[in-house]
Image (tube, rainbow, N blue to C red; front, side, top):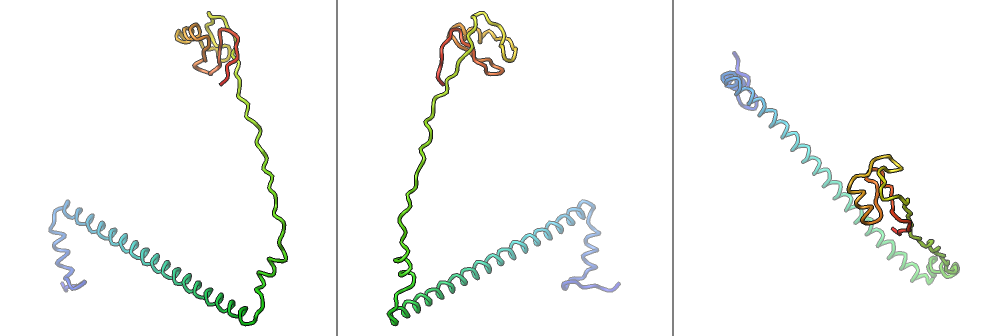
Length: 169
């Protein structure tokens, strides 16, 4: 066979070495080759992206620098023109003629917040079910109702009170 050279290495030697490896070795070599290729592609991508960002921001900075220098020369020449000619700047004349009275801004005060008052349904101390959801009162709920005078349903949150009184929350 004729020797085929790629990058100065005989192709036939590489193929013979690869075929001489056991099957798991060939699989690992292929995985390694693909991993190196993927890594090379990722590195090239990020290097090109970094170079593109670098060029972009350098050009942007140079543009703003030249723009600022141009504005500086424009303002200097404009100032020299008005100093030499003795004419007033048009901006100052327009501002003196068009001074409007200051506007008064009226701030509307918000309505006062009234506290919410909750009333509880007056029940007997031997109540056993919630009138909203129908779930039975637990022993701890009945005990809380008899001790504290009020209780909330654990399912729907409806409040019950042993005596009629308003409680602010």
